[in-house]
Image 1 (cartoon, rainbow, N blue to C red):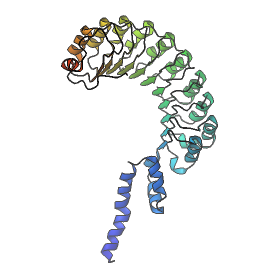
Image 2: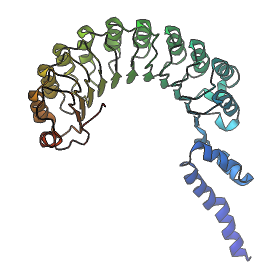
Image 3: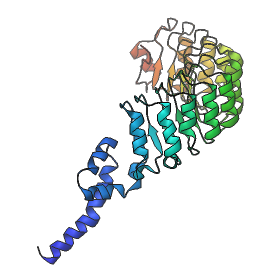
Image 4: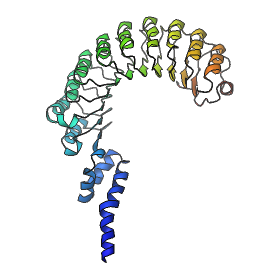
Length: 351
């Protein structure tokens, strides 16, 4: 091999290959990336030298997730992890999160996203442990956890002051006390999910609506206890784009007419809002002219008048419209709906 070839190989090894590896590795799943570490010492050194590759820990749906988490956070390459996903992971308990607090605190100091969805063995104490060193946390999700109570939320707001995206859906033991804590500590919240938090009342929701004016997404799916007393104050959320009120049995046309003041709404789920009639839907059509998604599924009190109003004001934006079960609407065949809403792509949200 002559000098020129040697020089070319050196350039190839030192410049071209690392660049290619960097590009390729950023597109690989975490498991493949870890497998690459074992190929050669050179590849191992090269990958380790790029901190941006080690910002995410994804153990969703994995077994032995607690041990895996502790082991990973003990490695130097994960000293600046920003996103941990443990959604529906198995074998993750408070004892593992206590180790994270006591021995891996430096590794989670820059954590911004923490997903504990479906981790049902984690309690209020676990939340205290895992968030203790996470002062930069912005997104916290603990969907479907019946062990979490107001104490867990108190631990969260004490340790993490910057949260703007919070998912507590299915946490059936939280009460208005949690909403008070959120309203007082997370006034910059942008996304809040409260699906099936069945102990909440109008009083708690009103605290959120009065203080969290930056909310862009509010999910109140399957919460039948709220009334117009709270619903009317949704009008205060001028930045709101997504609103899920599926099953809001006490929502009346008056309440919906107030919600119509949220002119930036893009997605609105009114499935099984059985008290709603044309009056409320027409108000929505007139006030929310950027609607792209609307479900009226199961509402027997709406008629073709609602579709006519929606067509007049939202025909150029609506791409999803579910009017199945709306027996008062006669023109609801696919072709008839397309005549009113030419951009319609989805005709069924619920089955």
